[in-house]
Image 1 (cartoon, one colour):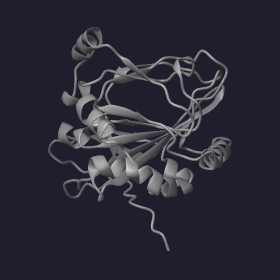
Image 2 (cartoon, rainbow, N blue to C red; image 1 turned 45 degrees about the vertical axis):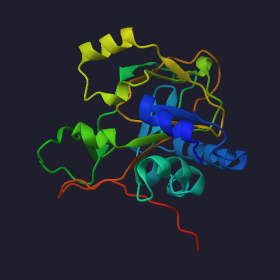
Image 3 (cartoon, helix red, strand yellow; image 1 turned 60 degrees about the horizontal axis):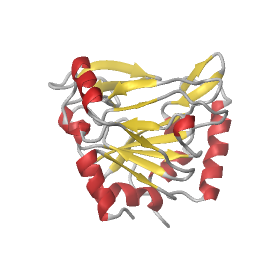
Image 4 (tube, one colour; image 1 turned 180 degrees about the vertical axis):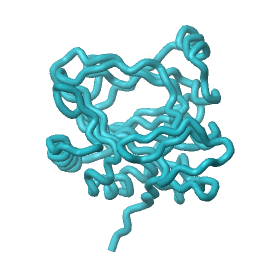
Length: 246
């Protein structure tokens, strides 16, 4: 369960780091599942010449991720912030290896995945990723979402840990000049976390990462949660709630 300090950190700073969310057995299980999925050729693969370093539509590729997203261990991170009715709306695998190593510039996460494209006021900049329509909603939708980044490996400065600019989640969609200004005016925080730990992050928080410097992996299951309906006829591409126990 999140502490009051961690809940306050998400509200005030846009993020917090939580240790020891997943057991070693759970971490090992999802490492095995993701490695099998990465070895298969499929539309969800994000690859370069050195191999697959990401998987989109992760619940479709690895159905067990739905169980993880709805598990008590993960729900206890989400519900204190979004409420008991929150549901997972997208899952992605990110990895950095020596063969697939990259840096990410400062940015906000601005799009959501939906079932079909429909023209609705306030929703635009349509794209399609691995066959799934994606759209930028009004910023109030993104402001009320939460990303849960579950780490399958130890993640530190040398392995390209996430960097964030605290408090920047309070802004609307930012132009490039505003991003540059905030980067220069705000001291960044490095989100180092051990395997089995998590980083909770508001999607509008400015975040980035550096290329890794060590020979390792940095596997992260990135889960996005919401607790609102989209205006009809738009629908979330996935709506996964708590895992039921029989």
